[in-house]
Image: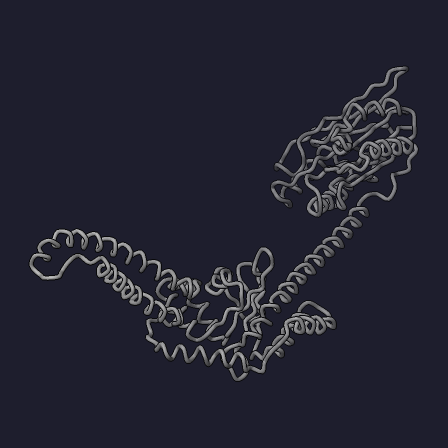
Length: 529
């Protein structure tokens, strides 16, 4: 049983001998003690009764040695006979002649020495590498490598099982990753010979102890596999080679097993390279998809701000990633009005870009309705997003309608950073926050929203921004901050929208100075004329 679990013959033999020696030593000690005591007591009576009889130490020692040798031989001879027997034969309880075992061993050794099939592992590796140079894809390279290996070894077939999740799979054959074969290969790093007797023993074991393994063992037995080669990397078995019996023989030679051991490294490297290639292709696909999404998102933003006499506009956006979640827009509304929208979608990446596109399309359709109030538009947009997106999707939103005739700004603020209305009255500069509105859009159904209006005058400065502006961080993890933004705006009253946009963008870029950002930076500037 120990040999079946992996012990060598010498280890099993020595284990039995040690146990025997311990038993003999213990028995000898007790026997000598009892014998000496009885001899001492019986010596006077024996000497007086039998002529010439006296205690003899040499006789006692010789008897003890003889008994020890007999007991030791009684253990060593059966142990040696059991050690040369196949563990599978012992498990099946099939008696086998010691002479037959010896004859088979000698015959196997002669066949190994006289076999004409020899292969140099280095030659095989170079042949496989040369054959794969013309391959145009990973499956093609695998086919070439398997064909080359089968020709060099002379196997009836070679099947590569690659690890895919919880199983090792070829095109139409698979075994579980936690099955009987992989359990053996985990503890046996060399090519594992498989015979009909092995499968019979495994099947009997599975029927008695692991019925769930029966199907796997039956499939392996019916496949005709006679060798299993684990393909190992540093951390796992990435694949298994199953080989059919060599032509005209049942077993592989020692030289062929050496070739298979070296071929295992080649195929393990091939599988790893294939995985790396798949990851590279997936990353390239993701990169192209992100680039396309970024291009689509750029097209959603207005190409240029509206050119009107009553106000000058400018805008700037800097995504933290390839695709951002910030959105701004200018809309030409009925009744001599201009719509200004700014949104910050929760999250980043493709999901945020999709929600941004939904806001863009919905806003354009809703804003086209004549006399639709800003608060009503925010309520409709909230209901639409709540119905059509996940429960955790939402966006902050600011929307304003600028009346060109009266210079009145009607706005609604849905959970967004309050825009700053900057005014100069004489030497005093005031900053008013536009915060009337309601909660973020998309999170709850039928949310109420309120709107407010403010009269704008020539020289007034309106700055709308996302939270990425005050939360922009430098290399010391310090935020740009609202106070630094307000100070810059106080100094910029009276300058043009384009000049202020360029100055603010430069200040933010200088503040960031290469530090990693976690939020997009977007702002819209309006200077009333």
